[in-house]
Image (cartoon, rainbow, N blue to C red; front, side, top):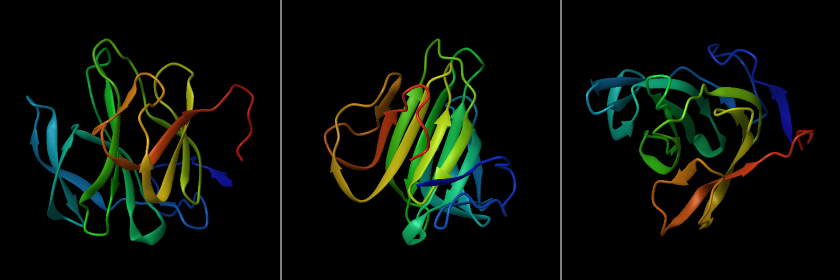
Amino acid sequence: RLAKRCRDTASPRTTCGPEMQVIERFTLCERNLDAGTGVLALDGKPTSTSVDGIEIEAQYLCRQGRYLICVGSGTGWDDQFTLYLLDKEGTAIDAITGGGLMSSGVFRAIACGDDALDFACFSDQRLRLSIAPTPHWRALAPAPWRYRSLLSRHHLSLREIPSGAGHE
């Protein structure tokens, strides 16, 4: 169940659910503004994970010591967001990207629970990102989202929340 609204994603004390909480442990180092990429640092120490994006929009501590982060880049007209699932050391396990050319959006967390995050990015489309403990075959995601590696199993699954649906 999705427990609470993510009212203040800047506060490290905000608890979204019993097992997911907002954190401020990651930063971007070695930013390449021309390429729109950066390297993640966990608690100030660079990791081996290079990400697409130049701003961390949100970050969460999940079950099993894993992390979920949203990294964004764009100009307001060509916005792109990538949601990364990371292991305890900050290495990417899975990723899903949304937006790109002619996409305008702002990442807004709506509610979060144990292994799920409801959010909006582009228009009023509300989405639920779920994190599975083991990877499964998934091919499609709601437009304009796509898996970073199509022909593999994924921990992350994304679906559109119908208008008027509650947080189950």
